[in-house]
Image (cartoon, rainbow, N blue to C red):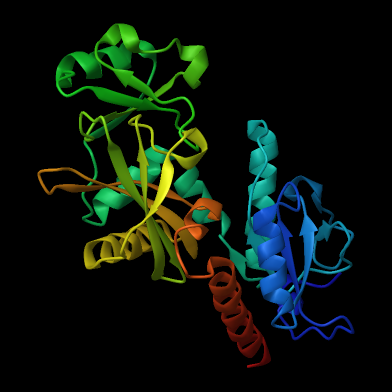
Length: 314
């Protein structure tokens, strides 16, 4: 059996460079990425992370469906929902690929940091970025104590620790608004509500690739939940200095090679970094920016592949 160090040697293939796109289906994003890589002479293979296996009989210790050996690079578009054991195994596959010297965007560590909102907020605050006052506790009694201690004027927002796309958000005006433990896995992640009273609500999404903010949009809606999947409308917005600086700093704080950073600006001028998404969609953003996001992502990842190849050769 080859050791991990052997897997870092240059690989000669008749088929050329191959990038795996990890996703549940060949959706719009996957098609755009595949086309962008194809323009650069790089082939892509669509694979679900749940179909990738540990197999100690193989030279690499891994077996990826439709591939006889580890790919040149991997981009994680989505990870399907699953139980704790399944998600742990899938993230283990990403850790293993990185161990073998395969460039992975985003690596498992960045995904783990971003999926857990409490860890994301901790890292953002440690990096000196402005975040809403936040608490994460286990048990409804602990959550009630937080509500009683900090008050609800302005209210608190309860967010699912592992939620996305604005699902499961609850505005907490008193302890009676806290959902039962089984709805939140007995973990209560609470943030001070820092938005305005409406009727127009707005926040911003900044897309960062390889440390550089490349595009931004405003998300506007009648509801304080402005996610595009929840009815928020993408609006063009300039990528000004503050948005760019906050976006780049947030990506660095969680170690994300590409991500979407959510930022809210209040009427009084205060700004807050709300979340970092390590598997961001960009179809809404693409409608309001002239920047071809998939093309830039493919370009920057191709550069990372060249760097990885040079290191192996050296």
